Length: 117
Image (cartoon, rainbow, N blue to C red; front, side):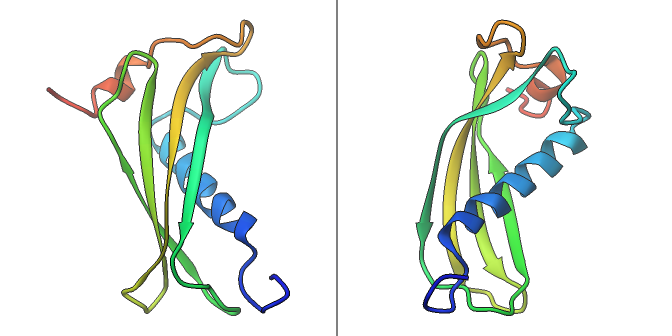
């Protein structure tokens, strides 16, 4: 919480991150340090629309855009359980990266398969 009794702004990014990690793991890519390649974030933003007051249960909706060679955009909407108003929105650009080289890698075919032409 911040000085005004609101959810601290850094926590919105943590909620978006948790939704993204759960989504990526549901795709069959467990987030672990020994993987050869995996997703990294090169840009993230958040627009704070309504302050979230304690106590509250956050709900995050995640949407993904068409993939590029090695990246895709994700968008987020944050709601409070029991309230239809959107409290925050955000986005993150996800790039698939070779862990050893630190360079971008083509998105796995299984990720591409989620976005038929």
